Amino acid sequence: MIDGVRMKNLRIIPDERGRLMEILRNDDEMFEKFGQVYVTTAYPGVVKGWHYHKVQADNICVVKGMMKIVLYDARKDSPTQGEVNEFIAGIHNPILVHIPPLVYHGFKCISDEEAIVVNVPTEKYIYDSPDEYRIDAHDNNIPYDWVRKDG
Image 1 (spheres, rainbow, N blue to C red):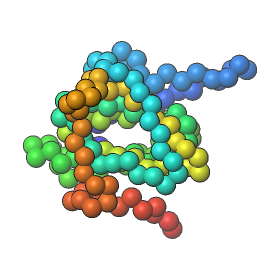
Image 2 (cartoon, rainbow, N blue to C red; image 1 turned 120 degrees about the horizontal axis):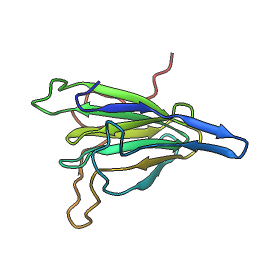
Image 3 (cartoon, rainbow, N blue to C red; image 1 turned 30 degrees about the vertical axis):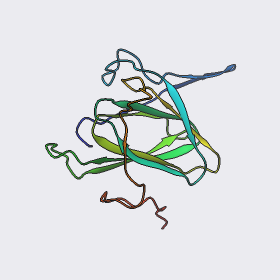
Image 4 (cartoon, helix red, strand yellow; image 1 turned 120 degrees about the vertical axis):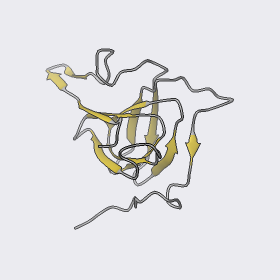
């Protein structure tokens, strides 16, 4: 696992009325602080990536559909520099992925329906000076191919 990345299996509590799933609690090992909560989506086959943050850590949970969440450690001083982590997350595998600052990340919707992600970053989004640094999803130096791996 990339240094600083954490993954938490989420527990679903069903009953005759429906279900409940806690995503992030302030007593979780990965909880640092609260910045904001937002929802983002991707349509089937769409890749959203790559980007990283200099200050913000992300706490990502897929609450509808399925996503392939991929991380790349480009940090020069990291013991896991050059490592890639791939997580299959969503309705069939409810997990929370904690992504520390300076780790590239992106995701691809791998379900037949739009996938919905809830993110609880440690910082609020600053519209006139966002802590977001992007590179092209496919044309870059990251050793990862977003193509589905059949076989």
